[in-house]
Image 1 (cartoon, rainbow, N blue to C red):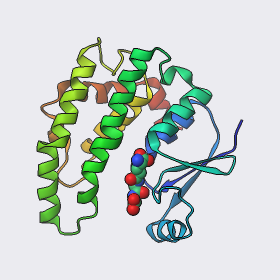
Image 2: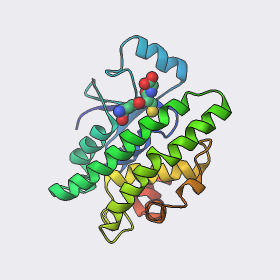
Image 3: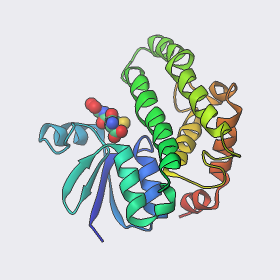
Length: 207
Ligand SMILES: N[C@@H](CCC(=O)N[C@@H](CS)C(=O)NCC(=O)O)C(=O)O
């Protein structure tokens, strides 16, 4: 097995689905959690290929991009998390990219905004615009199957990202994005409930 080290901040964020996938794949890792100044110093030293985290080192080779990490970890240790069937794989990838890339990038400017009123204004625009579009799209994908997860009963790497996103919104840790934000999206809420109650996720929380 390769030697794995995951570097991120000391919080869930983008790394949490990768941590969960690694746990489910039973792959031991070094879970390196940085404080802000440490991140800045290591970035300055060129430690992160794209200047961002998470970074997953595989036998010392640093690799970026959360979605690629999720696919890699699934293939390595828990293949059922990433369907081999091309159409199912496509559905997983499109949901992953929508939340892990489109929504995350749309959220970024507000994360760095210090003024609370301006931050809330950015969040209102996000909720009404890119987030609404993304949620409607993912709901249409869930609606194609029996639910409650993206591909029915089967847990996939996309469910890790969607479920962690629902959990983050419900946590109230993001100003202006709350459980109420999910009110118009019943299938996403149901996905979040089923995800949280899934035995694999319960096992992760109890580890
Ligand atoms: N596409 C990358 C984006 C990574 C990313 O934007 N990471 C953020 C933290 S969540 C970061 O490192 N931001 C610091 C910066 O880019 O200055 C991924 O999905 O892994």
